[in-house]
Length: 152
Image (cartoon, rainbow, N blue to C red; front, side, top):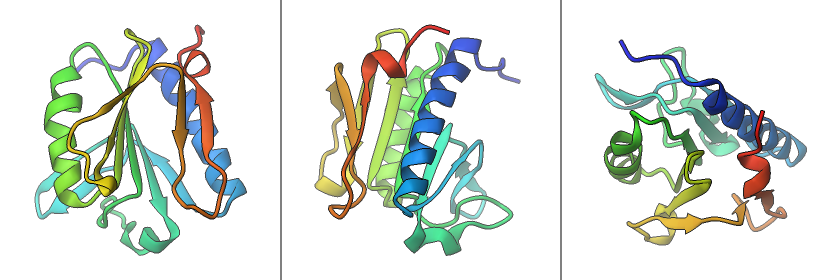
C-alpha cells in the first residue's frame, strides 16, 4: 500500500483542478475528473491525478473509468512517483492517443509538458507560465508557476 499524498501535493492538485474545471466549464469544453482510472485494454489501467475529457470523448466515461483517450492528463509529482510519472506513464499515454500529458513537480517548481498530438516524444520544461489551449476557438488557460506551487 502506498502512502497518502502529502498536504502540499493535494494543495497543488486542488489549485490545478479548480483552475482547469472553471476554464473547461466557462468554455463548454467537456468535463474534468480526478482519481478515476484511464483504461487502455482489458485489465490495463492507470489512475492519474487529473483528467480532462472533451465533449467528443464524453461517451467514453463509464462506471469503470475513462475508456476513450482523454484530452489532457495531469499528474502532481510525489517523491515516490517520479520514475512512474515521468518515464512509464508518458509512453503509455502517448501510445493510447492522449494528446497532452503534464507533470507538475512541486519540489522543482516546474511543469513537464508532453505534446503528443504535435509529435513530441520528449517533454518541454516550463518554469514561468503554463498555458493550455485545447481548441483554437478558445483563448488559452494561463497559470503562473508561482500560483500553481504557492504555499499553503
